[in-house]
Structure formats: C-alpha cells, structure tokens
Image 1 (cartoon, one colour):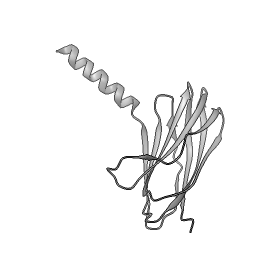
Image 2 (cartoon, one colour):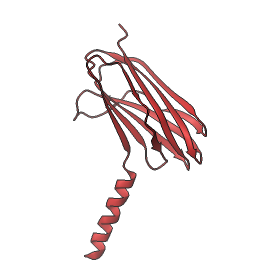
Image 3 (spheres, helix red, strand yellow):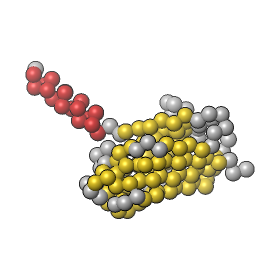
Image 4 (cartoon, helix red, strand yellow):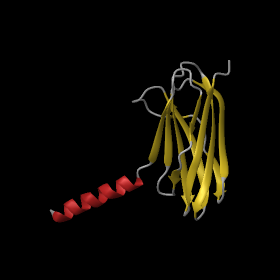
Length: 148
C-alpha cells in the first residue's frame, strides 16, 4: 500500500512539473491588440501557451510577434503554433502550421501572420522549445484585424 501511495505521489509530481505554463488575456469589446510583457520561461520539457479571449464577432486575420531571449544553454528551435475556437468547451482547431525559429541563442523575434480570415473568438498560441536550453518570452504581441 505504501508503494502505491508513493507511486501516485511521484506520478502527480511529474505531471505537475510537466504541465504547460499558461497566460490568459481577456479582450474588451472591440479590442484588437493584445500585449503581454512579463517574462515566461520555455524549456524543452515545459511548453508555454497563451490563451487570448476576444470579443470578435467578425472574420479576422491574426498577427503575432514574440520576443524570445535565451537564458542559458541553447534551444535548437522554438516552434510556434496558433489554434482557434469559438467557445470555452469547444475543441481547438489549428489555424497555422508550425513556425520554427532555429537556434535561439540571443534575443530573437518570432513572427506569424495568418492572412486567411477566420471567425474564431478564442486563440491559443503554443510555444515549444527543443534542445537543452532555457529561454524566456520577453514580450508577446497579438493583433486581430478585420480585413474589410
């Protein structure tokens, strides 16, 4: 019985450590520009994702600029994916293919532009590091535009 309890505690600790860090940004009516400038750490074992909830009731295009800076070691790549959905309990749909920035060893900007109009009201931006380095996201800028 002690072994089972110990195994459960170890499994819980591992899952807590490997859970993705997240940041949620809430938009006001008509808000199109979102910015988050508190450092968030990316490692090869802990991806980072940002959830952005907008009030968009029209088709939009999306633009992302992320400032990534190396803290220690070297990530061989940082991958960026953009997902969208309309409601809190809906499944996420991939909006963009992976954008990979190779060799994050200094201050680097990663950009993504989706010019296909979508009707999503919520967006998830996922950043995943590879390699043995530790990096931080110094700033995230997210812009939704109504192309009409």
